[in-house]
Length: 498
Ligand code: FAD
Picture 1 (cartoon, rainbow, N blue to C red):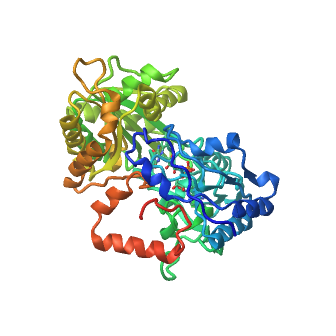
Picture 2: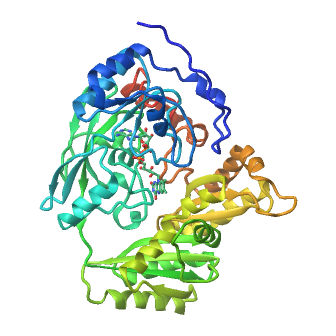
Picture 3: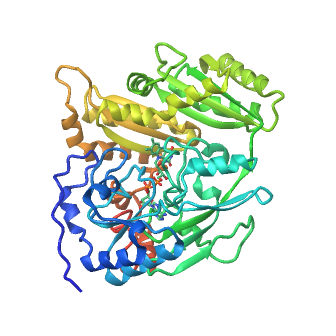
């Protein structure tokens, strides 16, 4: 066996996530011997080794750059198991990766070998009778949505990255998205899992039972574990009836506070038909219209606060009357000042495009300090105002982007430097105090009984904050679970818990 050699430290950390570059050097490079073994195991189609080929796997959606010497690309569960076993025996860390669209540096390698699940891309089974689908880890979310639709069913998970995010990644981050208030998060959509354990054994928990109270619910451990406890190779997922009609409206709210009382009105008047309830501040809309091609918005200028309301109905009759009545009630109550109901699928898609392009528009404008915070739904206005006050104290005249899933209490919040303001902080200066800003925003979130990561997870970015925010007992339990399932620490080390 060749000796370990420490990796060269990566370039100084100029990223916006505040993890010091010195920490990268703690992670060891894999042994050349293991790489040779993996090449033999996987054959020429099953790996990438050239610098040019592995580079895309070491760069995430936000443009953050890591490094990896080797990407293993198994195409079957048995091959995944063989890779994991070999790494376990060599004591070499692996970073599982799906679409690499995660936001918290969970899948971005810091000199570890990448275990890419993208070649595990088969839909194994679909049963409209049982309302279930079994998809391998590398299947892209839109492929599952399309397969369900072809079978006359709905897979309801939906999010801005659905064209790249994979089932394995979505399970491992317990993804949320835009339909959580009606269908729940990924955790609520999983019947069962197939998982390769840290030592390479395969746990087949691919059941499609709606009722199963046989001991501890093991799959829950792997959902949201961000690849630190096992490698998800396939998931059995729940399907639903396709709605017969969908109605989408863009609303101008009279104030931020209006977002809270309008929700129960919309829910009860529609008999629970609300499937999308997305809040957008004017700054985010303006970034989208400025930076994302082919986007249009029904109001000029963008209102201080807009709301994208979507309702899904089992019958077409009465769908339009219902949304009209809901909007009229919102206006009568002084909660909505204006509203446009999409007249066609194209118009509805345009409303959603503006909403879904928020991260892209904001990214194209430049860097900032990002947050994925939540509070009880009734406290969303206070969540946003508190975050703005906290960010504004550290970044005078900051611009704020606040948008997201107000219907389930989750707001994406970014602090950006002022633009063109004499005497304001520059982008570099704001990024330099990233941790301070994030801490202040998270403090304000916690005062409302909220969460510092509503749906993106912990990764490396929020690991230290997690340790600070959770009680010592909770951290002890989390670490006990990690040590039990991955005693050698070879699965995604340094993410979630240390
Ligand atoms: P990756 O980014 O590759 O990995 C994510 C984590 O899971 C990493 O820790 C990785 O190690 C681990 N992992 C990946 N595959 C496996 C596997 N098979 N087994 C074990 N561990 C694995 N997220 C939301 O929740 N809601 C949103 O609304 C949302 N909107 C987004 C919009 C945009 C534009 C973008 C870029 C991202 C958005 N995200 C959102 C974040 C992201 O899409 C999700 O976190 C998604 O679940 C990541 O899937 P992925 O396949 O890209 O996983």
